[in-house]
Every structure is written in structure tokens, then in C-alpha cells.
Image (cartoon, rainbow, N blue to C red):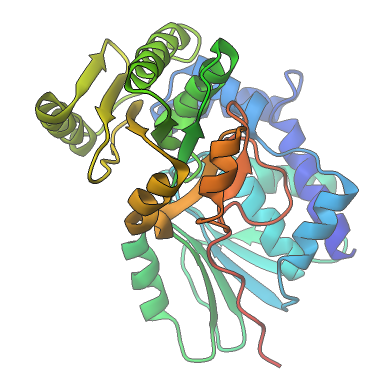
Length: 354
């Protein structure tokens, strides 16, 4: 079984998690709300919209080219986005016929169900299994996902000669110079999926236009988020997220406008000297900026953490020139990137030892 076939087997297993008639789907829907803190409707919607279960020939070719050939890969998963293990396992198994997966204690359901699907599908060449510890040896590779601090700690424990591929903290931004109802509705959905805990989640909206247009955009986005909460209700909020929400609200009282309701907060600031990036669920900071050039200047201190740039206008194209590694997506599609390699393109895979 070659690398392409192994990836296709992962996708076939993932497809079972969205099949209403499959017992694995029913188990996922039963277990994921408790594990993630997201209500069942939000879990179901994210499974349907964001779980990778197919790829074109071109996407598969790109994915296979994005990883070096290895003999064994160890994967350390994060628990922020429950669909993320699909891509992580696909990348690892494309790289090596033998993969050991250490799930996060906050994200065991999808890895467990995926591996069960692979076992039921029947193994031929290659193996993939769960493990409770990381035991990489010299000459092997580790693919790790998590906060920057977590990645640093993991890398510090590895023996010399081990190759490390880290996927750390990141977030998405959106750049707009038009705000049709369709665009704002799509942006609201990008925000709502996973309660903004993923590296593709937009937390910052840069409006290239008039101050009046920026205020209107922020108000409209907040309204869409409040309406969307009926379909995709938010989940539980951690204490540190609640604290971050209060800090943001206090800061915005001094520098801008706030649109705050039962489920979402959207702030607006005109012509800022620096950027504020909210770090709590369904919180978006919207800023009015005079030009794409000024947007690039303001984004420069944050550029190393930007993984996705949403937008489909001329302004977005110009801002993207300063962040060439960031994935591009139209509003409404930021959480659904093609399966053409790692979501996070900031750090290329390490070359294997020979």
C-alpha cells in the first residue's frame, strides 16, 4: 500500500464520521459535545462542513509532495479543533508507513474513531496506532501540534537526531473593501465554527474604506453572529477566556465602539496605531484602515502568527503580498481549506536524514 492509498484510507475513515447511518457517526455525535464543550448542533455542523473526507487528484499530489519520506512518524495532537486529527494523520501516514499517534487528553474522540475505522477497513501495508507516550528515536520524525510553549517543551525532550515539525499558535484575519450580506454571513460562519479556537479562525477584520463603512460592517457582523447562534450555539467558555473577554470590553470602551450581545462581541476602531487581537470565543476586532499599505504595516508585528487571510477583493490581494505563507480563502471558506498539505504553511517540513 503506497502513500496515496494510505491517505485515501484515512479519508474513507473520516467519511464514516459524517455518515448518518454509520455507528461511528452516532458515537461521535454522542461523545464530542462532552469532550469539546460545544453543543450538538455546532458539532454536527462542523463535522459536515469542515471534516476532510475527500481530495482531488491535484490536492493529493500536493499533499504527498509536502512531506518527506520517512520510516516512522510520531504525531502529538492538540485538542483545539476536533476535526484536525484527520489532516494530521493523513500527513503523517503519507510520510511514513508506520505512525504512532499521541492524542490530546482534550481531543481523543476523533483519533480513536478514525483508528477504529482503519482497523475495521483491514490493514495491508503500513500501520497506525494510538500511544500514550512520545518515544521517538534518532532518525525518526515528530509532527507536533499545540501552543508555541507546548512545542518548545516537546522539542526539548527529543533525543539528538530526531526531526521535528511543529505547528504552533496561529489565527486568521479577514481583509475587506466591500461588505455584502453574503460576505458578512460567510465571515460570521468562519468565526462561529469551533468557537474560534483554531488557527484558521478569523479574529481580526481589516476594513479598507470609510469609517462609516467600517462601523456598518462591525454592526452587521455582530448581528449575523447573534442570528447564527440559533443554528450554531456557542459552547462553554474557560475562565481565562472570560477574563480575556472582560479585558477586551474594558479596552474598547476607551478606544472604539462595541457591539456586544448574548453570544458575540465585535469591536470597532478607526485608524488605530496598533492592533488588538481578541482571545475569547466569538470575539472579533474590526478596524478601519486607509490603505492596504497601512494594513501591511500594522500587521507586521503579528505576521508570524497569521495562518489564513480571508477576503476576495483587491485590498485582500495587496495585503496578502506581505504574508505570502498565509492560506487564502473567500469569506465562508476559511475553515474548509483543501487537503493539499498542512493547514499551517509557516514552517516547512524538515528534510529527512539519510
